[in-house]
Amino acid sequence: MPKSMQKLDNIQRLDLRQQLVITPLMHQALKILQMTSMELMDYLKDELEENPVIDDEIIEEDRIVTDKKQDEIATEVGDPEQEWERIFESSGWNDTYVRSEREDKDIVFFEQALTKSESLSEHLMWQLRIATDDPVEFKAGEAIISAIDDDGYFRGDYEPLAKSIGVKIEKLIEIHELIKTFEPVGVGASNLRECLLIQLKNIGEVDSWAYRIVENHLSDLEKNRLPRIATALKIRMDALKEAINKISKLEPRPGRQFLSQEITYVIPDVSVQILDGELMVMVNSEWIPNLNINNKYVNMLKSKNISKELKGYLKEKLGRSLWLIKTIHQRNTTIYKVTESIFKMQKDFLVDGVRALKPLTLRQIAEDIEMHPSTVSRVTANKYVQTTKGVFLLKYFFSSSIHTDEGIDASSKSIKAVIKDIIARESVKHPFSDQKIVNILKRHGFNLARRTVTKYREQLQILPSHKRKVYE
Image (cartoon, rainbow, N blue to C red; front, side):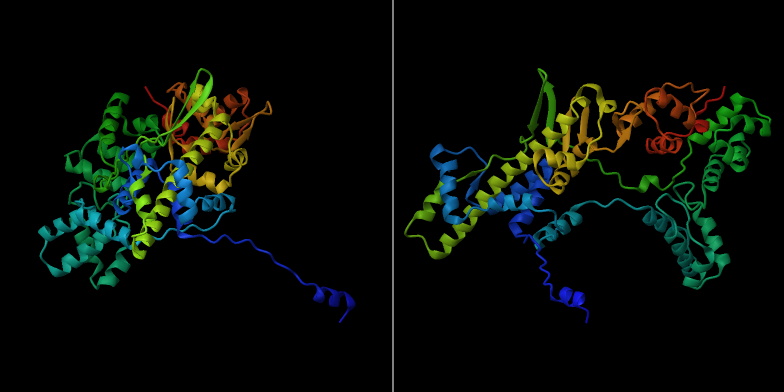
């Protein structure tokens, strides 16, 4: 063996790895950090029911454990706050959360208690049972319904469906035609044209201009080529617009009404405003109970007559209570620091709105408040902030950077706002193409490629210029 290889062979490699052991309390601390105010309120409600040594009511002063006494208790039962420091010093880890057995039981209870609305599939199956009592037809109808998506469109293929259930393709087609007569009108269609034609036929519009437009000129209609349609049908523009108005009242997604629409009520976790030129940040603690440790149980712990079992129980509950109070304090402090740092950098937004947003990354905030980016990510992921311009998710204020001709970085969100404003001011008869918007942005100092403008326009859910054009 060559000497060089021998030397390499003799080198001892020491691989030092720092691994953070995640305790149950640390898991819970991070879970609390990520909670919204409403989630935390529900969590504390359960905690107050289970832990007798902690109070959320105003009690006599001699029954409240002071901060000084809390430190004394921490010395005796152990202070879990140090685990917070370990969490924030960590460099990220897998914090997959596994629900407890109790939480699973709660979920089952609420799922059973809720009134379940009828799905599209259930609604169609109900109609199928009324329409036929033939076993073969029912099997065929069940197969067709299984291939209808949430929008109400048939997305299946006759041949594999027929083979899978052992019926002839002709029977499938026959039952499919039956299902197309079911409610909601238009359900079971294979494409948009067929869906709209079924609806027009249902309202007696088979010989109408609207029917002819959908049947033969739907592509031109989608591209807003009205003059071409008018020429092809030899129809006046006012009659054409009347027909299009009828088409616009049809339902392109007949299954939409069966999709559950959940209303989410948002309570801001923090509020921000400028007062006398100064940035004011306030964590919303209105919904969070003011927790205190009841001194009665502290005195009980010190009693000589207490049993070993009771003493162990009280020590565990007191330690838990101290940890919870300090964890909530740490949560609020972290939310405050992150929010304050964000709006130190996005202060102009509070005055001028989205157009004043600056590029911002998680790492910038993490470095500013000396925390790990993963901590900032957890705080901003589901927390809402009340501002002078409305309620926003904290993560809304992070966006990528775009370089301007003046050498100034601009936020992609602010540029989207400019694009939206440009389109809002265009002539409806002569809307701006994406290339025209590129040229206008260039005059404002933004040097963007046309494909970037197209991408931003699509993200804003704004149609291309040929579809925005309005004809006389």
